[in-house]
Image (tube, rainbow, N blue to C red; front, side, top):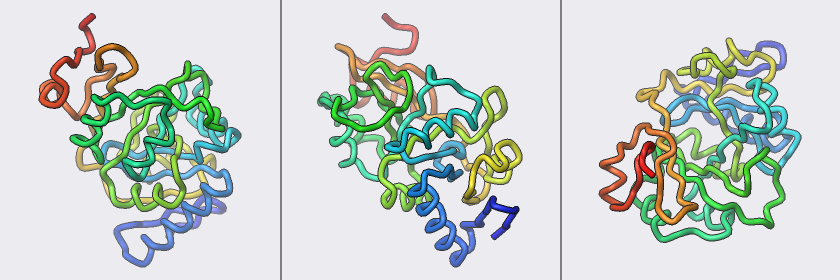
Length: 222
């Protein structure tokens, strides 16, 4: 563990330090602090999705406004049901095919949710990442607001150390798991309309998506 004043970086490639780091991250999120954790795409900066001040601190740390609300990461497919107003059958098919993995789906959030992610327009982008460290944290913390661990306009961090170089004391716990093996962003699909639509091309191709949802619209299609 690297203890840089109040900033703690844990090397999760070491079994003992991994356990200590995951617990430290869980405790930090519970307290409303920010953490950096690995995912299957790039490193993310995360906060408890149900603590509005923590989400505000996340946006501030990145240099973003409320007009760019963060996605939410979950540790289980079943968690999704508690976050949405309705889940179309195509969304369930996509989740079954690509979760955990590099697919983010935009759904209509349940109006009863006591959170404030920013100017969402009643929707939320949700993903279940394919990374053991992230999943272990998420299964204890519950849904987390998570964005790429970098300052807005700078390169996405591929290691926790790179994230710490950019975010420094804004984050209390950094979980290092080595360089991201496939630093391609997740594919974002909006399932709130009549037909599912790709909003951002990413790690999962349009052809792969159409094997599950044949009427999937590409980013440029009307």
